[in-house]
Picture 1 (cartoon, rainbow, N blue to C red):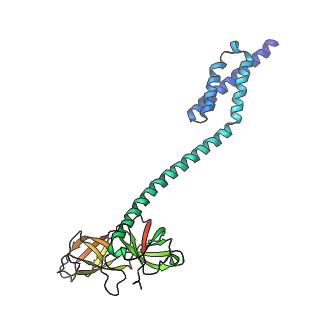
Picture 2: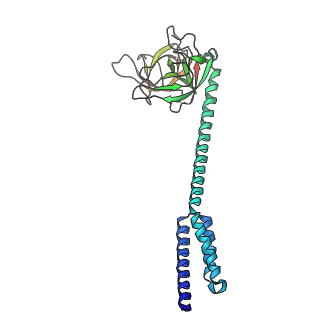
Length: 282
């Protein structure tokens, strides 16, 4: 009878040991609960010496195993917490990189203050808060409005050149029509003596600007800069950099050349803008 009871205990012990071994292998392969696996490995190394340790030496590690199993939920929570912290760090890193880009853009923007046309006008620094492009229209919303002196008709500068003009203004925000907008028209001048005039028209987001009213007998070449002309009744003050000629094509029988230009300002990733408080705005 006593032998039968000992046999049953031995069989029960072996079953538990097998379960422990399987659990160690499963957890180790899944890569989870590293500290738990480490502890269970040490148990596994010792449990196969029951003669040396006795039954009590086996029961204690088994108790620790089940205690670890009870706390496995907390281990999962710790793992989730760690993953969340890693995600937050990645977000902070991405934000830091974007901030560096914003800083570089801001520095280029502030460099425009050296231009005579910009120096003469009080600037208001603003940040883009929303984009509103479609197939033909191209606008952005900024976080400055009438309460800071921003009003309809004010020209808006981006890094390296003209971005557009304010077309709507509320107390604290404003809408800027970009020069690529299909309704945008900017009077420009070019040539060695800046005595040639044309109109730069928007053709929609992502498209080159159309340079209109360039007669076939007018000299104009690729790479030529275009600046606002400041003529009477114009929408912009004189001397603001607008675009660079990208292509010139003469068409037989046409009165004007087909000319396209690229904006000097990078319109693809606007962040900071400079609104010029222009007294000549309509």
